[in-house]
Image (cartoon, rainbow, N blue to C red; front, side):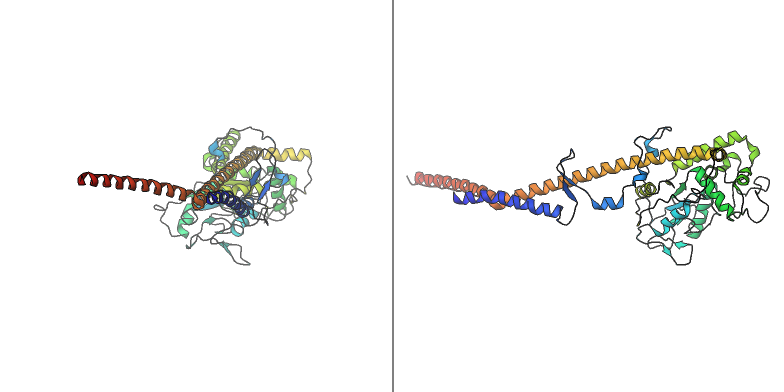
Length: 435
């Protein structure tokens, strides 16, 4: 009787000790991974600090609006961008760098700020970095800071899609017929008025980009198709009025032109169709190419751009992106009339950016919801695992505490009774024979 009482006392004491030890393991005293709360989410909550480091919350000034105005119809396929980027295999990331969209900063992030098994080798004083695959002398990144301007200065979508496969196969000595590469195109976009003013200030300081090839359908544009806006070496000191008055200025609607398939409109031959029809075709092509790209970011949303890139490719940046709003374009004071003029010159870019911004924010919202669901599923699996461990431990305690012995004693008693019955039967039989 006393032994059975001791067993009954031992089991609850052992269970309490197990819970105390488990709580210290899950929630160490020197951490803040657990806290007690009385809200409707439950008494006990646990957060993963690792997830907080990987997916940092956006800054307050980048928070989503309470309701995104829906103007375009996007499918779940448009919103769900998850790329299984095989950096060890044949996959190549291609960065389409549009002028004055923050592409230089983003390009440096790609070669200097990604956590990689084999980081890019960036030598001091050199502009290009070597971004090889682990264990291979092959590049996984096609960009200004890795391969240089191999397809021409600021090559556009039309140039890159026809040039990159040839250049990469030649660099890595691959057979184009047998090579099964995946080329994932990425880019950055910017508010059209800010981008236009930034390009004007850049040209005013002496930039020309006159070495750009502008290849389309196998040839560059003729002088008549793309006349120069200035007669000298550059356009240094150009006023904003003169900059806007040049009809062949490639700054006008630059983002649409660089994202569209120019072969659809006869390249730079303006006489192949009307200006209105040309604009419709270019805008539709730019929207389709942007939507089908692996990834694009917006200069005005740096932290969200970082978050979506990490979610899309499964790669992690070492340092967080910073939002810099004090740009040269921001310092330019223009009248409302001039702003309207710039918006008119960039009407296609304005519509493309409106489309891109809504898609970008919806992708961000979709990914945040997906992440929250994944975290809930992870916590549920952890809770179920802890419950299974708890049941297993209690069963083991019960067995060690005597529950198993009682069963063994019952089995022994039953076995003893069986033996007695067998002995009695044998004795009775022997007596019958004796009689």
